Length: 462
Ligand SMILES: Nc1ncnc2c1ncn2[C@@H]1O[C@H](COP(=O)(O)OP(=O)(O)O)[C@@H](O)[C@H]1O
Ligand SMILES: O=P(O)(O)O[C@H]1O[C@H](CO)[C@@H](O[C@H]2O[C@H](CO)[C@@H](O)[C@H](O)[C@H]2O)[C@H](O)[C@H]1O
Image 1 (cartoon, rainbow, N blue to C red):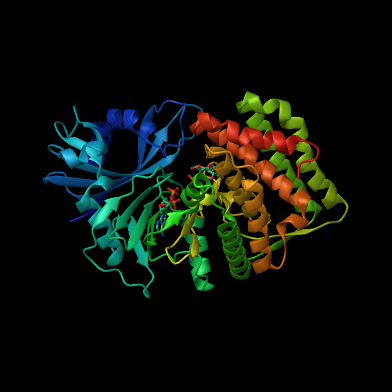
Image 2 (image 1 turned 90 degrees about the vertical axis):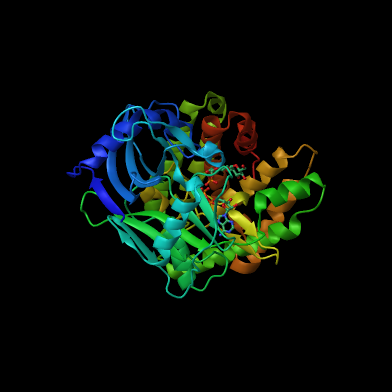
């Protein structure tokens, strides 16, 4: 029933027409999606990387799985994963999923929509994962030790996300990556490694969806990961804001989060290689930080007055390395913040979303880093929470910072505050990243990382 109709450079006859039908609609729809990474530049066209027919469009409901390259000026263009539904008319419940009405090509007169909103296509995906199906270029794999019940009812998560997730009967959650590239995906690699280590702080992948890369070089795309759904969980960001609004202390939770982070770091260091960072490795790392700072100052003028002082946070690290100090680097989460921490009703914290910072190149995201990088991310997050609360919260972020570092020290045997130069460099690097992120995605939030920049640029900054 389901088949791959073509891949880029392939000889299929259906898909060129299919793409021509979709092209004008997707040009308008894609840039409006939260997960579209190429904001600010027009989409000038698409090329097909792969198209797999999951249900033929000749029936009441057609479903295509597509990987498309979106062409944009001055870039090679990113590849996106889409699940396209085709119907005669769209029922009202699917109105938010509308992509558009086709006016030419083989689908003329049909309505196309984001099929992840629809029950049947989402069920098809789960069934494919459950049965380890191979559909054209799409391949499903799963952990044989975990059971996947059939018939679980899907619902698309509506939260603002970098990808798209479907929850099945409050039992599993399937994340479909939107911007995709061939190669190892740390959001599968690291949770699998942690599961092998027996680390209970990260939901163990249950099944995953892959596709061979089009260039025949032997690489694969990881297109989706299914994992157990933590029922009734509250994320750390929501919880922190709730406690802040009530004027409640978050110290105990921050401490527990510090312990959870250290446990994950310990398991990652056992599971995957670590390296020693001497001057030869610290120098390029510091250069990377400086380059990112310069690019950020170019992109966001408000950052420029602080750039020279921020640079000293990085050069101080290079100076220590030149004096002979070394550090250990290991695989880390890479984009840790309160929103990536889930607290189950039992009080147990889990960490999710090991993809790393979406803006960084994939190879860079998989490089070993000092574990303090994640610590710095969480410290920045406490600062964000304190700034997002309407009620003044003097000392709240500082108290969380202390509790988190103490919790981390309890589990790791070393306190991140004992290496203030390293911590300051990574906090600065993160704040610079956030300045760019907010300028691009949420300009109203720009003052939050900018206030941190002001603090970190002050000579007495911690
Ligand atoms: N295992 C899980 N259990 C419960 N909720 C989850 C789980 N994984 C993710 N979520 C929810 O889905 C949201 C998005 O997940 P995340 O992995 O951060 O996706 P993205 O990469 O798209 O940001 C999280 O903020 C959380 O609310
Ligand atoms: O969750 P994502 O992987 O999509 O991460 C991106 O978006 C985050 C915002 O949703 C952003 O995080 C920043 O804002 C948070 C509050 O909304 C705050 O807790 C974080 O500390 C702050 O960095 C993240 O940087 C970005 O990569």
